[in-house]
Amino acid sequence: DGGITQSPKYLFRKEGQNVTLSCEQNLNHDAMYWYRQDPGQGLRLIYYSQIVNDFQKGDIAEGYSVSREKKESFPLTVTSAQKNPTAFYLCASSRTVVGGEQFFGPGTRLTVL
Amino acid sequence: AQSVAQPEDQVNVAEGNPLTVKCTYSVSGNPYLFWYVQYPNRGLQFLLKYITGDNLVKGSYGFEAEFNKSQTSFHLKKPSALVSDSALYFCAVSPRVGSARQLTFGSGTQLTVLP
Image (tube, rainbow over all chains, first blue to last red; front, side, top):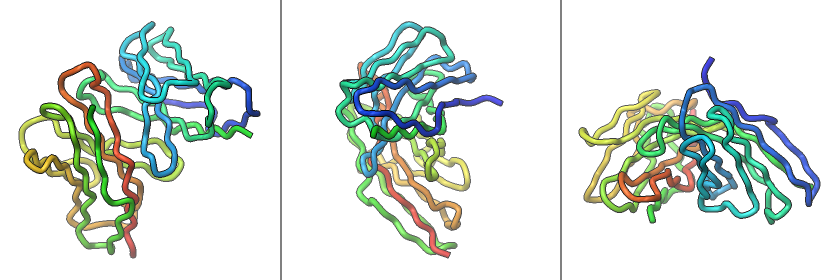
């Protein structure tokens, strides 16, 4: 059953703690993405990766970090430097960055207390 | 930089009536254009895309979209709405050339189909 998985679905953390969100895909896609979704603001790109061991900052990368050690995996770390981390986080993948439709995971809702 | 505008935060339509969700874009050159749908607390699902060719693009679940280059629009349409179409719809654009070719999403339009 091909697709993208994100875990956990819900995550609660105390202010000042780093937290890592998991994203795995078995679609053999080269490109992977992380988005943040806030009410009324649509999706904003945090980071994206076109190939293994390479990634680029998106529009709102400050306070976040990523790694791409394997084609299948693109974890996102929300650091204590992120001023307002409570949000819905979506991971996506596509065959290519240019022109290819993106397939989305189910999302992780992060709440910082 | 590219941008997408979805001018209506909310669209209400009666079941069985035609629906339109509006999208306009700004991008250098010819765009790639996409529509996605999101159900509550879920990820986005791809509906359709415009790459080239016929300006009327047909997609999943009976949806279609019309690319209008002169008006820089890509409105989503369906001839007969279903209650199950109620969801959040996103338009997205990507330029074909340049260094920033990742997708830019609109802010979304909440579609409610009334029984």
